[in-house]
Amino acid sequence: MAKKSQSRTFNDVLALLGSQKFDVAAAHEGARRTAGAVRISKYGCAAEIAAATIAPAAFDGAASMSASSKPSGSSAMMLARPGWLLNGEITRLVDKGYQKFLKSTKLEIPATADHLRALHDFTTELNAATGEMNLFNESLGTTSDKYEYDRVLGRPDQPVH
Image (cartoon, rainbow, N blue to C red; front, side, top):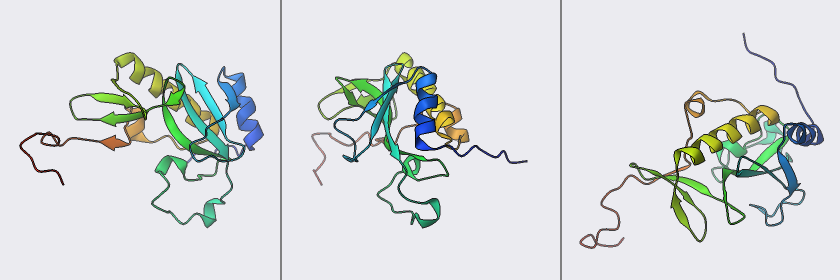
């Protein structure tokens, strides 16, 4: 039997996150420069959320929005996917096949097991608080939004496309 999730207002979500020891602050340089965007952080990780402005029935499934930013009955919409904070910037997790990396606009560092564990715990707790759906593959560990498995890419003997 499917569980019914509680419908929370955006302010209820913020209050719940604050009570669970998340740092809740206004997002100065938001992912989409959305008015009212809020940066949520804990364990050295962060994400940006805002009040959902698109009704779930009106959502057209545009390719420009990631799966995690689609409204799913929650009053909070994910603007920036959860990532490790590096110099005040939310990094992107990149999987290069042999190792995962944390990539910001200026820096790319190898992700350690501690980084991945903190990111997984942060994402799980954030999804539970915002009422997002818990997916099986995300329950197994940390998932990336970008994969770079081509080992030939960047070799000097290969032509540049």
